[in-house]
Length: 292
Image 1 (cartoon, rainbow, N blue to C red):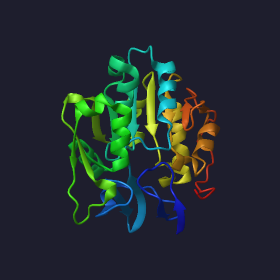
Image 2: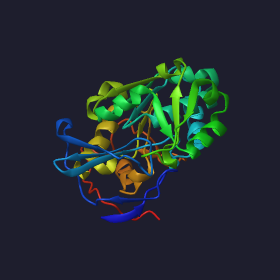
Image 3: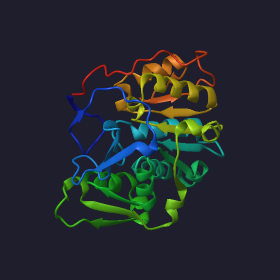
Image 4: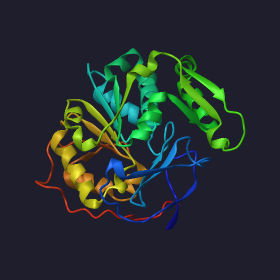
């Protein structure tokens, strides 16, 4: 195991990552281990396949590896005049990221945010989706402060915040319960699915696809197939967004080799419309550096 500092989080600092390639996994072989008092997120599930780590569900509001303000400027320039934008959030986990997306769109687009709705939130993990569908998210003090500061009336009008009493299993990382108490929740559709089965969902014009911070849990071959699949099926008008955890394993280089084009916003890529290669590239999934 490697002791490392994982990027893009207000809630966790040091974690152990098992440096290994993970074989393709199936839902019926999952074993879930829910952490009683996580140091990094309100929803933290470690999922095993046949006794080996398959993936971790770690999530939060406004995950800091993405510069949200710069990304929203990019969205406004590219899609601000579009009558309909297809927003898909794969690997949405317990729902913190689609909620972040929704509130950022409301803040930056005004009433035009409705052109981006509904957000199609998807995850392979049935447990995570069931958690997300409840619409009650535990957040830490930093998330609460950030949401109040950034979203002001949007946050105050649409969410009820309850202080969680201190007790066994309660730490500073999950001290508030955030619950949507308006119809705003209708703007996010949570469903369980595999991204490879969602061709009809992602091949629409003006698609923004969040597929962040899960690529390292794929084998290199499977990651290559996913990049090729997206390049083949997404329109030239579309955009994908990955994360810092992905780039730690050179997934950005994989995308570029497959034909995706860098933008001026870190982790944001425009689709090629067709792949730069006629087959998945030969990609070896390995970590190239420790985060410090």
